[in-house]
Amino acid sequence: MAANFIDYVKIYCRSGKGGAGCMHLHRAKYLPKGGPDGGDGGKGGSVILRGNRNLWTLLHLKYQKHIMATDGGKGGQSRSFGKDGEDKIIEVPCGTVVYDGETGEYICEVKAHDERVVLLKGGRGGLGNWHFRTATNQAPRYAQPGEPAQERTVIMQLKVLADVGLVGFPNAGKSTLLSVVSAAKPEIADYPFTTLTPQLGIVSYRDGRSFCMADIPGIIEGASEGKGLGLRFLRHIERNAVLLFMVPATSEDIQGEYRILLRELEKYNPELLSKARILAISKMDVPRVDDEGNELPKIDFEALQKALEIPVIPISSLTNEGIDELKDQLWTELNKEQNQVIEISHAPIDVTLIEKEEPEAQEDDEEQTIYLNEVEEEWDLDKYKGIGWDE
Image 1 (cartoon, rainbow, N blue to C red):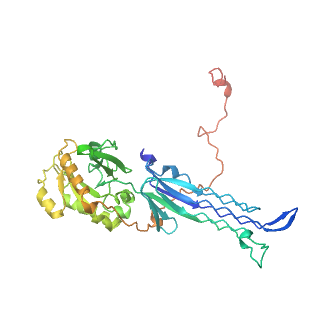
Image 2: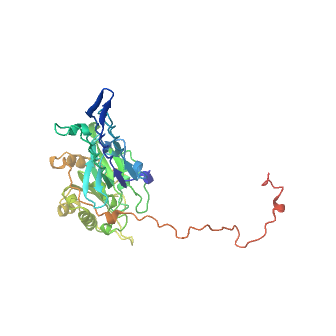
Image 3: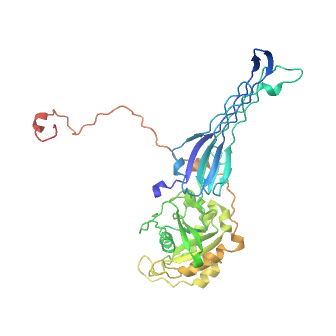
């Protein structure tokens, strides 16, 4: 499943060009000078994005590098209109943001199911010479050409829609928490960067209510400079109403780790700091000792909450300690009026930083002889007969 999660594609799109208008003068047996009757050209097809809530990845567009609508047909005689080009509809998951592939400028965004956004408009068809007849020019011998097609290279980025986003260092217990409070089954192991792609889970609450939680791959100090997995997946928490920071109780400096995470988010997008934040101290069931086995001082949660000015909740995914309290706090924050509208401006992206280098082609394309043995030898095939290989 992780290999199928594609949240970035770059494709070339082109709309259809308009069909040319027809230049034709009507001729009939008893009507030698029937006048102009050239028809209009057809409209070129448009490239349209349409939201689809049944999609969760851009995998279906990964190998579709060129998407082109069809051209409009030419006009004909007897005021026959050309056929309109067929629109090309691109199905994308809700939360897809489109940028210009050359400059990185923001173009559009698809948020809702069945929402349609015209990415490239098809060219208008040209007018036939029938439109240009006048009292002084009764037989115009010209018609309009169709409008040219529009073409553009675009970058599509998926930013998943979730109410709560988990932020923390690798092995902070984010995946374990998500597996406990929802039916999601993320990979859980005792090594860093277990989660390589965002994971979504629906958290059940009281009276049949629920909210969506997103587990983002862990970030480390210097992620804004490309260390670890970098900031590639932080785009998925831009629409979250609440950010749930997780720091394990075994950390020697809980406040320091929280501020490091906050600083990396600020480097990525300063607008993220305006979102509601909650700090969960995970792994409360693990003894609080340092690397040398010495016992660390107990955590003063009241002092920590006062210093950080955000709710601080101790939890344990193993014993379910504080899980209900955490759900209550998250539900309270989600229903606050200032957290209802989740709007964040999409700043232009730096195309040079996110472009992936394609592997260079091998210079030597000549065929090479491969020997099974290092030393060439004469093969005596007679000694292999009778053992079934030649039957």
